[in-house]
Image (tube, rainbow, N blue to C red):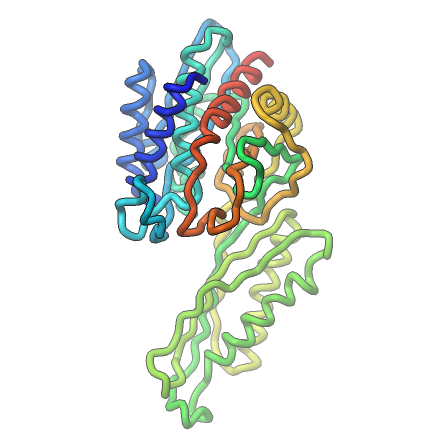
Length: 382
C-alpha cells in the first residue's frame, strides 16, 4: 500500500473515531462508507441491510466463485477520556472503544486494493455490519437475506487485538472467541422497615447469596478443562437506606467455549436462583438470552487465512482463544469462514478493548487491508 493511501485511511479512521455511531444508530457511519465507496468507483452498493448495514459488491472476470469480507461499524456507550486526542469522540457518552472504526476503515482499504489489483477473478462482497455490540446485527443481516441476496462461498473477518504485537496476525485452529449470553435474575419479596426485618421477605439477602452461589456453577458443574465464565455485573435494588426493598435485580453475562458448558451454565443458573429463592422465602424470575455462538474457524478457511496472513505479516498459531464474544459467529453458522486477530500493540495504560482510554492503532491499517484483500484473492483462486 502506498504511503499516500495509508495516510488517507488514517484520516478516514480518525473521522469515524471522532463521529461514532452507537449500536443501532450507525446511519452516519454507513453514509460515510457509501460515500467513500462511490468515490472509488464502486457502483453496486446495497444499503439498509439488517438495519444500517451496507453490502458493496466487486466483480471481475467471469469467475463463479464468491467471497465475503466483513467489517463491523458500531461504537459503545462509553465516555471517552482521551481529551488530548485531536480525533477524540465528539458524541457524549459514545466512543469507538473496540476498534470498529479501524475495522470499517480496513475494509474500505481492502476495497481499494482489490479495485487496483487485476489479478483476481470472481465476486467479492464487502459486508459492513451494524450492531455487533449486542444489537444482533449479524442475525438481522441474515434475516434480511444476506446470503441469499449476496451468495458467498466463504466469509472472512478480523478483530484488532491489544497485547499482540502490532501487525501480527493470529490464526486459531478452531475456537477463536466464546459463545455468550446475558441474564437477569429478579428476586421479589416484601418491603419493610430495615429495623423490622422479620416483617419483610428480603430479596437483598437472596441476591447476595445468589451472587456468590453462581460461581459454584463454573467451579463445580463444568469440566475443569472446559472454559466458562459467569459474571454478575449489575445489582439494582433499594430506594432508602432504612428500608428493605421489595425487589432486587441481578444482571450479568456468561461465556463458554463448548456447547455442553453453555447448557450446564444455563441450567445451573436457573437451579441456583430458584433454590436460593425457596430458601429465602422470596419469588424469582430468571431470564437467559444467548447473544453469540462460539466463533470457530472452519479448517479449509483457517488454512486459507493463515496462508494469506503469512504473505503480508508475521503469523502466529500459538495464541489461545478468548472468552470475549463476537457476532461474526452467526455468519460462520451459515457459510464456511475464518476469523483472525491482528495485533494492535501494547495493551497497558488503558489500551485494552472497551476501556475509555482505548484508541485504534492506525499503523495496523495497511496490514489489515492487505490481509483482507489477500485472503479474498486466495479464496477466489480456490
